[in-house]
Length: 209
Length: 209
DNA sequence: CAATTTTTTGACCGATTGGACAAACGTTAG
DNA sequence: CTAACGTTTGTCCAATCGGTCAAAAAATTG
Image 1 (cartoon, each protein chain N blue to C red):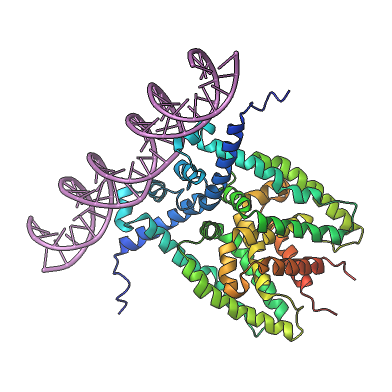
Image 2 (tube, chains in turn brown, green, blue, purple):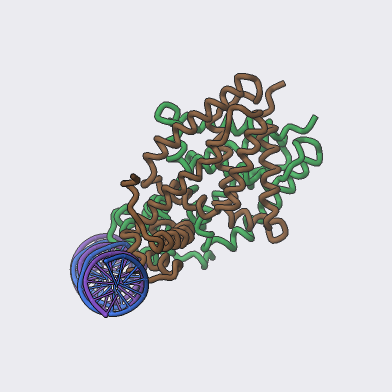
């Protein structure tokens, strides 16, 4: 049973979690090449050789982080379901994505960094798992369009637009804050964004009268 | 006259351009810390000491690149004008931004990299020049809204949405290609994106009947 | 031509990097 | 207690990094 997962002691599990948490901080802020093992080790409160006892190579940390990220990152899209009302479904999808940008900005930036560099480490996943999922959900949206529930348009670019607009608030956070200024740049910006995006997209998808 | 600009020979001007062109390749693909002077020098076809003869520090190259970028990067928004028809103005703004994502993807990624890392080198510009420009254009859009020309919504988040969706096709290019696949991932994707975005945003901004 | 200035290069430097390793330390089971 | 095992650390290493420097080569000037 579970032969592929190496057996680990309690300490190993805890320390590995500690390292991954610290590495998420460092990698998401500096990128892979911009981060050093020393930085991660210091953020995790341990020495470099000690960290390397738990992860033998810097890349192993990044790889583990990426695998976990992808599982949770696509969860909102997986939930997009055929059964409900299209408008309600799309609204809550937008809301879930925006909540992830608000609550997990480091994960968003980690992902953005990887894609920006050409996705050298996760390209197979993009062409495999991600593409199939998007194909599947694009078909669902397409069904809604042909049923006259929402306006006919390109479902793929619709998904891109939702990704882009929601993740923008995590990836370009400093720019958003700088532009909004101190008065409007507080936590309320996510509520404003949610209201705006729902109005824009739902209104923009109203079936042609 | 022009005392602030150092006098340069023809060779100096040409070689500096060559270096900046090579550095744009390298920086946009690997980020600042992920890029080495050797890489840039090789891409420019010269030795490292020779490159350092034209730019004394790695950061000088990046800084020059950034200054040039910002001048051209905000040009589309500057052109957004009060005089024309709002819908036409917004449509052509989207089209210009999308053309920049298509024609200058390296510049877009260079900018995205900088923002992702917290904009350490251009923060003053974000809070100064950029914020004033956006404030000014948000006021223009606000005028259209109060005149009943387009639906009332948040002009700042509208601008963010246009930025996010258009730049997405440069910054997340590999993901877009992977998802669209070989059949739809060709150059036609920018035309599809343009059609989709215009429909979405213009439809989404139709004044409430 | 020769003198001067600009451009290019090879060799080199100290700092930082990812990682190896053995020894020391701590914990646990018999 | 003690032997075995798991954990931690100091030290070290080769490679790579950004950058210097003096001298050679090339271009420009008189």
